[in-house]
Length: 218
Image (cartoon, rainbow, N blue to C red):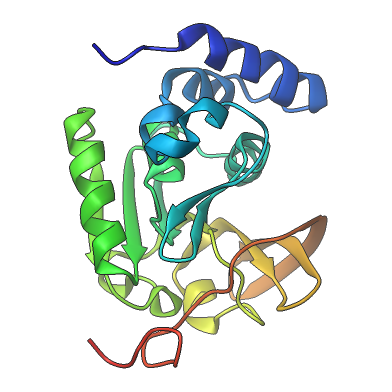
């Protein structure tokens, strides 16, 4: 039997999240429910509830719990909201979003990671997540508009296509920059966009289809 490790999750919520100022109870409850240890490779399982990112293969990482909760809280998602995630990765952030939003659309460039995350999330019983393998910088236009967009890899600048897929009062959170990075919160008001710089972060770069890192068109 796989250990539940609920006590570790509850301790994580109290010491890493609530103690550092996060206060959205729906987000905190989601962080307490989602079994992070099932989203990391076996060799990293002992550190699953430590407040640090962990490698998941293909030069990608699972973000530290505080950043996952911080970014989710920043979107202020409510029941009935739909959200787009760019960069499925391990599927952990996806699961947290699926706990607080009505439906999640998630895009991952690396097919291996997408299929692995889909199998894991379906095994955990999530049925409100839509998966796509593709270039996340283009978003998911046919499913737009979205109440929230969360980007889990850093572009040099915010892709214009993603801004256009926000609902009229939607919010997007995205790490921006190639060297020094910061989280940027974007709020849409009609046809205008307001940007707010939040905190310094370090994410893997957002890789677009056809780049050398991608290995060319698939």
